Amino acid sequence: MTADGLRTEIHQFIQKNFLFDDSKAIDDDQSLLASGIVDSTGILELISHLEGTYRLKFADSELVADNFDSVNRIIGFITPKLQA
Image (cartoon, rainbow, N blue to C red):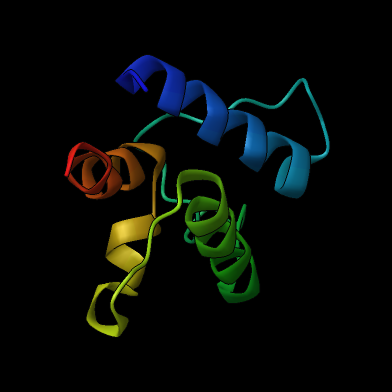
């Protein structure tokens, strides 16, 4: 999957599951936690979605907020895993 395709899919997941309003947009560098878009339970939903959709497994040590706090951080974190 291309970075643009991945970006689009992540945006759609966040929009559908956390924003519920198509008129709201998020910036790729916007903190999902600090802006209140996603809470700790939402991060778990996001992780589950990424694992299921992309058949990824994350080590416990990788399950830190920094890896999942923005669209760009998510892409930067999972892209190497998808390429492996």
